[in-house]
Image (tube, rainbow, N blue to C red; front, side, top):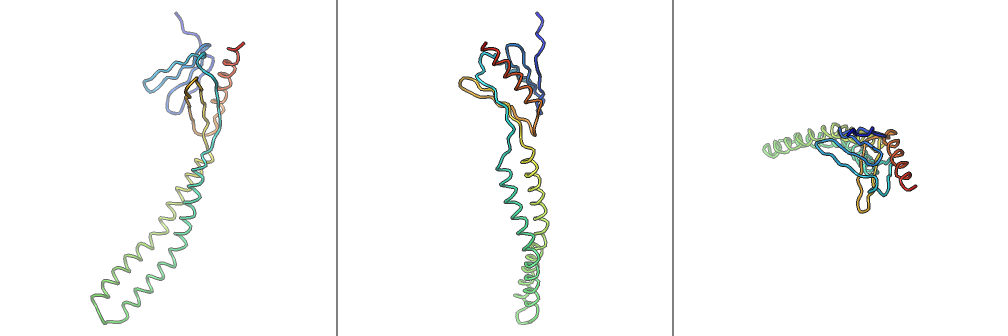
Length: 174
């Protein structure tokens, strides 16, 4: 017995594949095979979505990065001035040495703040990019469950696959 030719196929980014036949949808890949008869599907939904949490995190990280960058210069100046005042008097040499060491370490940490701000800015840019790209999700609804297939970005091929599947489901009721 020969298998019927598929009506539509879609390759997911994880290497798996959705295939639509006249009476079933097949999901195969990663060592698994899932066959869903069209009679079991209640509805098909495809949507382009953006995760607002990514944008929120990007904004928070941007504010933190700007605050660190703005605080770095004044903090370095204040620590250098405090260290200079400690070295002026030669009253207690041991305490002065300890304070100079502490201020030196704090000054070094303050010099790292611009690098930390730049790293946070890079993470912010990445999160902003992921927000703008969004995802396209195909959701197959059964009587008591749903199965979602997600790909990054706006994917017209997945929308076309969902349209063909929806037409097939609509034709089933006639």
